[in-house]
Image (cartoon, rainbow, N blue to C red):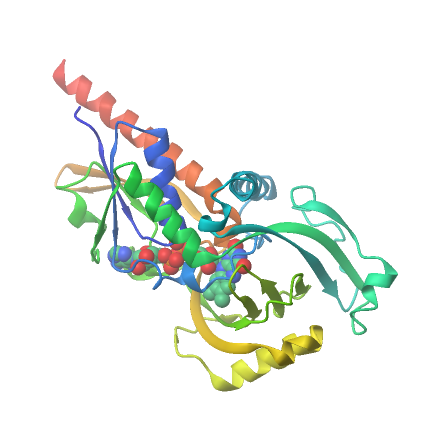
Length: 341
Ligand code: FAD
């Protein structure tokens, strides 16, 4: 069999990192990324990019933990290299604070982030409306720079990238041997997945360089995440809303909630509003499927539905998707050598 041709549909953090893992694990493959949008116009560009996992109720915790660990280890190495600034990856310390002590005082990811510990009474004095908190250091991706860094790495190893809207995965059958579906919320239409739904998120990106620590309310709704170039203030979680228009009332509400956690934000400048649709599902769809028409087959690997936690687990799920692509190629090579006998 000639060099297997692999198409990855989607150029958000999941598509780009999956294309990279496929190219790394199968150097003989010819990998192409096809996407109707690239950075800065993807959901991944809107994200805060914090490595604090979201929990997928339909995926075993040990699997989610493995995805997070692989992603943390990968990005930690980048943060500790000369590439860190260009890739937009940095360590950030801060606090997750709770109005009431949570049932689970130790989240499953507490031994992967650095220095996880309960907050001291003195630290909690900063948050008079909260009675419990956790302090730790994690990683943050500045999302557009990270996506551009991934694109640059892909180009450097010969991966082709084309702007193209794919109406049906089957249309790629004559050009590619394996297709990887990383279409995010676009998979709702692309493969008609009714289990996939949007959770709208509105955030503000502000200039407030004096804010150095992250602060996250334990309910996950209000957060302050300092990045290299701006501070992300959040947020909202609006299930089944497809609207990409910013809502001015929500902007004021987010700003007020964040100022009540960090009053110095009243002096923030240059407020930009962004909206994105989290591609949400009970579990990430990470599986092989074989499409078939008139006796012709097209192996597909799905890797979408990362909801509120795509950055936190992207490298782990990309590695697993690349492994599934390897299985598809082995199956194709097996059938082509059987056909020659
Ligand atoms: P996307 O970034 O949406 O990429 C999908 C790609 O597929 C796009 O390039 C699109 O153009 C392409 N596409 C779709 N349909 C087609 C088609 N038919 N043909 C061709 N191309 C197609 N996660 C974290 O881990 N930490 C955070 O702090 C965090 N903060 C967030 C804050 C907000 C406000 C939001 C909205 C999300 C946040 N997330 C966070 C979640 C994270 O953004 C997502 O999980 C992640 O971006 C999903 O990546 P993706 O590549 O699957 O999707």
